[in-house]
Image (cartoon, rainbow, N blue to C red; front, side, top):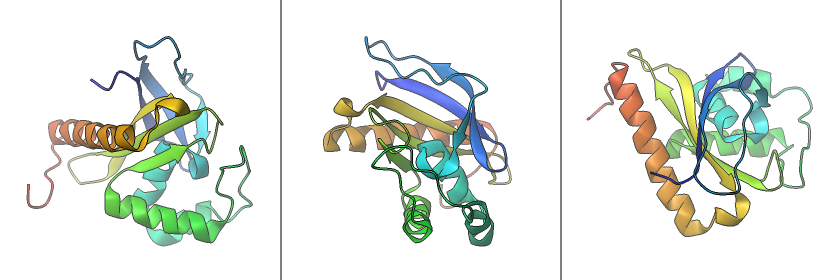
Length: 160
């Protein structure tokens, strides 16, 4: 539906791990190698998992110096914690060239029956596709997809 690459990741305690991927039909694709861990502080899936943790645990994970991967990588813990707070509010996370300079992604949590974030689904694309309009569309699609998977796992949203 998105026309982009979709990835499913699991949380490994301090980083997100790619476990499955469906490539988009376009000529330019982002390949997320299965089994490859991704840093939590500069990937959409990592930020989703951090946002699902208690505040103190997220701060502990981010207490070591944050590695800069690109000029857009957030390396300030205070700034990253503010972004994680925004992810909690919005329900999805954005990576706009923070880990790889030419790659953007939006991710949302997949929740189990108890409401725990057990996976993250992400749509990944070349940054030149990541216009403000496309961002809104992808955020809606990713959020809806994560909600549907969560519903199938038995999660019932409050008020829903």
